[in-house]
Length: 370
Image (cartoon, rainbow, N blue to C red; front, side):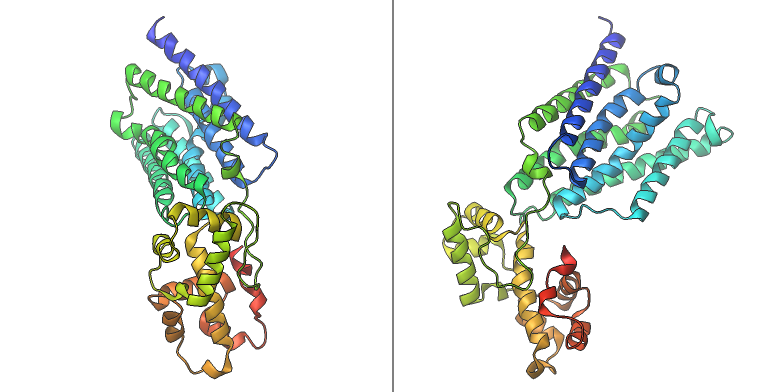
């Protein structure tokens, strides 16, 4: 079999597997934005091998533009997926979606303009520069997605997600970074056929691995919506009493309340595990499964912000500086305290102190972070 024919077979098989994997993600009983981003990104593998195939425009006509646009949008969607998975922020703003659309449109204009096609047909040099700028933005988005996957790995309490961070960076994101940066490595002429065949073999293996993982339900917990948070305003308590680590979860709640361990600046999951005489992985599982938290920092913030809010409402402490309350509640400086407080309440600590008699109640804790 000639190398060109083998490459076309690889492309066809990769596209079929990637589309099947995307369809399997969408077909899951629980549909949400995270699953939608994941399906779009996986299908982006198919879009790439189709749009970049020799003779794609002759064979598909206007359909080739659709696959090209899908391929160009995939790095931005991977950025959205990373933020939704690893930062628990599945929502995307209209401005972000508009920026993604503009990035796709401008990169496509540059891509076709260098071949004297489209609105930039008369300016091939400018089109080439625009294409490279678009590729650079795509690579930057992917590197940022990788950075989001790496950051906060230590405080992540969801076991499946901790493993997914390494997979995302090491396999999925790395593959797309290579694809997005190929224009800089090989120039406008594209990669040689031998390099393409090797890359498509890797993409085929990736698409197959994703399909098998989805079929075996290995991504079900990861693609599910965030675990329920403890009731706003209620005392921190065990929300799930069954399971091997329920006793440990109760001990966590009791010790945190009795010894006020959350007041310690820089308290980490390893420090708390040492204080409680348990293993770090067991503590993660207890806080996640039995207390309902997905992130250790959120767990600490709940204790600290409840205490801070109570003291800000206390008339006896009305003259105490906000900084003093922040430091006493375990924050090392005023900046992180202000950001965490506003994210939770929607107002700054000073505004809360002024408004609480009229409009802000303790039951609003957690309302703005959901």
